[in-house]
Each structure stands twice: as C-alpha cells, then as structure tokens.
Image (cartoon, rainbow, N blue to C red; front, side, top):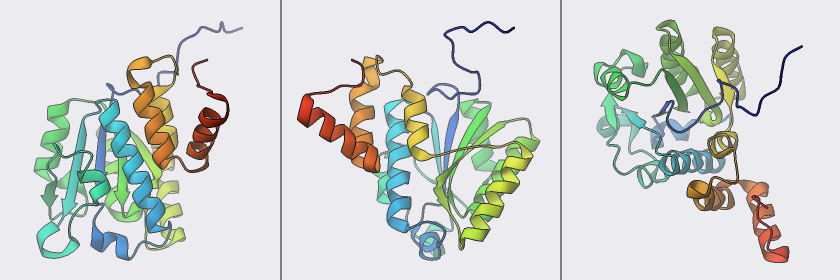
Length: 217
C-alpha cells in the first residue's frame, strides 16, 4: 500500500519551474476567433499575465507579422508584462523561429506553458515541437481560441494525445498559489481572482464584505 505524504505531485506547476509562452494575442487573430467569446479570451489572457507577474514566471511574448498584418498584442498582456518585448516572427510555428527558441534556451526551463491564437496552428505547432524535443508542455485551453469550436477541440485533443497537459486560466493561477498561507503572493492572487475570476471572484468579494472571510483562516 502506498504511503501518503504532505507533498505536491511533481507535475504541479510553480512559478520557478516553467516558462510561459504567450503567442499571437493580436487583433487580426482575434477577429476570426469563434471558439470562445473574445471578451472572455481577453479576460483569461489578463488573468494568466497577472499570474506570471505575481509569481515571477519567466515569460515569452511572441507575435506574427505585427507591423504588416496581425496588429498589436492585447493591452491585457503588454500592460502587465511591459518588460517582455514581443518577439516578432514570420513562422506560424513559433518553435521554428530562431529568436524564440534562443529565448527558451536562455531561460532554461524544461517545462513550457502555452496560450494564444489560434489553437490549431500557432499553439499546436510549438507544443508538438517542444514535446518532440523532450520538453514538458502545458496548454491553458481557455486562453486559446480558434476559428471554430471544432478546430479548437480537435487541436486540444491532438496535443493531449501527444502528451500535453491541459489546464484553465483560473486553475493556472490557483495552482501557482496552492496554499493560502503563502502570504507573499496572497493579496495579488486574490486581487487577480476578484478582477478576472468570474463567479469565483464575485464570491470572494461577497465573503469578505459580508463576514470578513479569508481563505487562509
């Protein structure tokens, strides 16, 4: 019989063990996104950007044909991660761009968490490429979008079959916090959940207002 210990699974993420790659959160890509409401997509992009800042996650922001076609990155990303200058490229697969993989290697993390547009092209390409080269890959599926629900779902299915691990934006934030007694990141985590956590955030406001509740107690 196995023995239980109060230790987390090795597959759980923390702020120091991975790189977050935010791919093509750009105007032109969002125009054709149909698998998720664009307002929800922008909210989830903001949530994971805030999480990366709170937990000092090394992040790579990349764009495709920013000046000539696809336009600027969402303010929800650049406003939070202002120190991460986007790497512009021509390749649909960011993993085929020398500057992008040079940054992956410079940061030196064996795990990469992916999010962006579109799931079936600009997310599938680097995820499958990273897996083939021995990296662990995670995909924040509700911070990705595609031209149809079918395109998004088949892309997620393909990546999972190849070994990628799916998660959601709120799950990403709470997995990084994981213990409400972690005081250094508690306030920022709660603030992000209130601002971008939907019904969960509303519940936090209610509990604090009505009975001064706090998760750590």
